Structures are given as C-alpha cells and as structure tokens.
Length: 126
Image 1 (tube, one colour):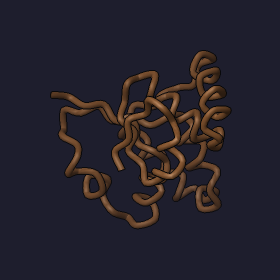
Image 2: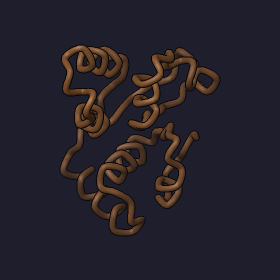
Image 3: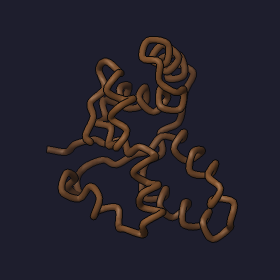
C-alpha cells in the first residue's frame, strides 16, 4: 500500500550536512511507491541557512528539493496553521508544516518530536 510522507526540514538539513543519502536516513520506512513531499516552508528554511548563501550549496539544495513534490501554502492552509500555532504554541514555520501534513493526510517524517507531538491529528514518523 502506498504511503504519503511529508519530510521535515531537519531531515534534509541532516542530508545536506552529512552527505548521507536520503534513502539511508529513512529507507527502512519508505518504499519506492510511496509519495515523498516537502513543504514550500522547508525550501525557505533551507535557503535561510548561512551555508545556503554559497552558490554551490544552493545547487545542492535545489538538487535535493527536486526529488520531492513541493506543497505550496494556500490561504486555507495558512488559516489552519494559525490555529495550530495558537493551540499548540509551536513556531509558525512548524505550524505551517504540520498543517500541510494534516491537510494532505501525510505522515510527517521529523526528528523534532518535542514540538510536533503537541499537534492534534498529526501523524509522525520519528
């Protein structure tokens, strides 16, 4: 059965910093039929890093991000994220990512269990 995953920024940062292959990090959970996506918020977070100011690093980010379906933020999603932020007291970027996962019925793959476990209805794969 095909599963749908939203990959959190922290996972991609690990890939970029360590040079490990993405499949090494989550390969045991994911099959080749599964849908893998990231939020447009993740793209912004990756580009906000100091190392991303170098063209070579931007090329790595672009190459990595091109492996995923990028989920945009609609006004409906933004409203849901605002509600999540208010109820869960998590950072807005995390609330936007959580809202994206919930709206699309995706499982969030993250190392940030501390914040995301506060969000009701969010499925998490640590």
